[in-house]
Image (cartoon, rainbow, N blue to C red; front, side):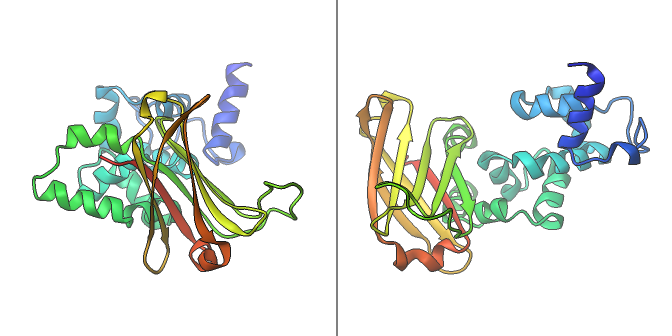
Amino acid sequence: MSNENLEGLVRGYFALELEDIPARHREQTDQCPSLLRFVEASREGWGAQEQEHISSCGYCQKTLAQQLRFTHPSVWQLFLHLLGRGANERAMEIHLEEDGCATCNHVLESPLLTRVKRLVEQGEENLELLEAWLRGVAVGAGKLSYTGAFAAEEATAFMLRAESSNKSLSATLRETVSNRLRLEVASPDPNHAGRKVIAELTPKEGNPTVITVTLEADEDGCFAVRDIGPFGDYARTLKNCCLLVYFDK
């Protein structure tokens, strides 16, 4: 693929209209990374000099905010924002307040981050140790919607997936053919066998449902299943909900 074609795809990724923008934005400086670099950094992270520039550059913060519409910040990045210690605060403000991202606002208001924030402020948690743990939190958010009629014994009408940014943990919340709500949790690492995993199902309004499972070894790593209860009992919660799944500390 030519550089021109790749640049076109990247501009589309950032929801920009090619015919409406000049070769160089009026706020862009010589130090601003290219759009291609923004995509690369979403996977690899920024270098120290790049981040120093991006944090203080209006153009870069707006570009980052557009990127967050597609990639979403990690739980760790949201937690740093909650503490007021984030590296890209303006981009976060645009994403959370102006764009009004429901998923990320759900995470910010979750019992997990509220609890951890309180512990950090009381000096009971170390940020360096928290980073690895929070990067392992699996996140899923959605609204109750049906995908179609049942076609097989394990077909589902409702399904919500959650996966951590470091791929260490994933979860599926589903409605079974027998109209039960079931939680399935998996980890590719067999060394996690025996570890407890906590799932928080938090509605937009109301109290969260907290479920604890213990991982057991299987051929793909580790797995756990929990029958939560009749699907109808949770339908109101699932209309607009956030699912956070994480290892118990």
